Image 1 (spheres, rainbow, N blue to C red):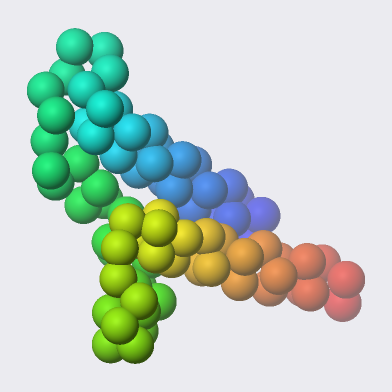
Image 2 (image 1 turned 180 degrees about the horizontal axis):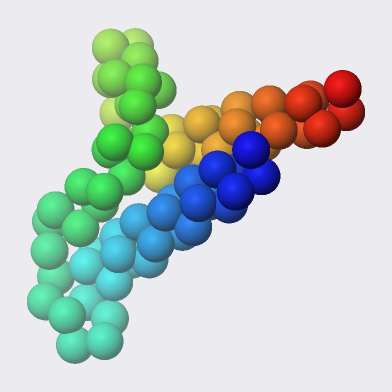
Length: 82
């Protein structure tokens, strides 16, 4: 279970890095409006819930995968304590 949390955290950090690189044009990359697309599948189902509740915006798109990471981390800690 620990490896799953680590893989998800690495994917989340990679998607955040791609978002920052594409948004600000770092490392000679052209600015790209779709640079945050990799955060969407990592944040499911929370980004759909936020959208239906009317809470849209880049902050919610960035925080949605963090909820899944917190849930995975909590499950890992709970299983380790058992």
